[in-house]
Image (tube, rainbow, N blue to C red; front, top):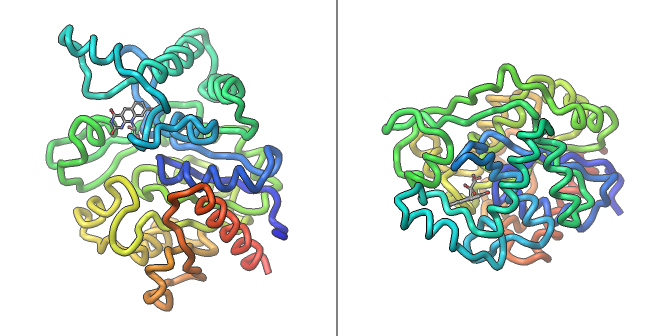
Length: 315
Ligand code: FO1
């Protein structure tokens, strides 16, 4: 039986959402809160799109599209296909059901609601009891500095299919963004922080670099799960980015990146069992455990191991 009973999970995209689902099976709504990246957000076709909040919302509601890996289950595409036939922008595929969510959120924002309030309304309507909290209600926009110039994150990720070589990242708005007060209050008596297996450069950085988060979590054991397994990203461009940034695409390099960029943040690191052979080289307490989550059982097993690791670190 785990002792740590009030956990903050930091999540970005689809990989992070998988562990989030496992944690939500183990911990109740008073024991688990999600701090979500908003750096991927953008305004598109006049709508406010929050891809990482959406990925988590659909996953927690059991409504995620498993074939695509993003978007909503049971989707149809009449709107976007019709838009394309009329010469409109159709590179960012908004499904018909998904559109309803973006429309609802955008209208709430237009009416003066915060992103937090809009997210709470939508997640509750979708039957999610856990709190999904945008890291900030202020805009933060990830810009990928690439061989094709500065690209808004979705332009790099979806329109350019992550093809341009990257040499850095910028988070517009970050220095003016206020930490969501719900997170600050939760962290005051939180037992542990789990950084889900999300891309450290574009999913985790714009969350943990929001002013006040590192200070508020300084007294709390924090572990990160590697999104790199056996030299490859489980999903997305993390491994490609690391190579382009002249780093080896390994779990060890991810741990070293966290240690160098955020000294003292991590109390422990979690790698996949397939990387066990390198475990002695890690610069912080590290465990190896199956971290590739295919089934719900995999998600729960990894969540459970993370909880036990936090207990071990707390002594
Ligand atoms: N990802 C894609 O690869 N192609 C898409 O057309 C696409 C559309 C989309 C629409 C709404 C939404 O919430 C997410 C969408 N995603 C799409 C996923 C998303 O861009 C990425 O998974 C994240 O930004 C990466 O963390």
